[in-house]
Image (cartoon, rainbow, N blue to C red; front, side, top):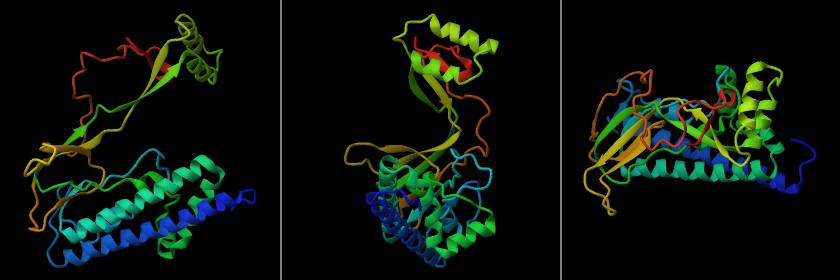
Length: 295
């Protein structure tokens, strides 16, 4: 651990270790309960693509919190599934989500207050659980994947009659940039290159107060529409969510809702038509930065 950390950082790191321990315990409790119920031919489970899951598949999904070698740090591994869960299992999954949220809260506090302590914490946490550390060495895995640690497990608020899965390939993130910020980013390239000079010239020709949009296309993801058996108290009859992790639906009767079979691979091109009220120009303004002008 770095020697120049203040006492407050050590206290936060201790809290982080305690919350990580609690997260591991809640994951173990949920996985063990599922495995016990699986031996009794429950709970009913659907896993994409079509396959009959063994009793340990949920453990693999829950404990997958590590970067693999050569993995893009922004990439997360997905476990698309629907589990018809008993009240007991739903409570165990809710406890996991609470532990994930507390772990994330402490982690964000450390990132804001003592960012130098973060890398050390990531290397120390696996050592607190020998079986995890052994698995990392044995499988050639490295580094705690923070996003996979804190991502929540979807729990349906009420019984579900059907689930409709579909690939979503049109996602993107948009970051607003000032002209000055865009210029600074361009100058990080070789400003002697002709294509960079052209873009700097285009930037100089627009008002200095204009706001630009830097667009990042997101990887395709699976979306799920849950249709509730009865309308919720607020009148909603369905809920849409990202399906990166298993979806747990109330199911004391051990029956799965009706589930469609989506395509095995996402579409290769955009499937949604462009909105008429699209706020960005169609043509990219600064190609090197994926920056667009607003209409």
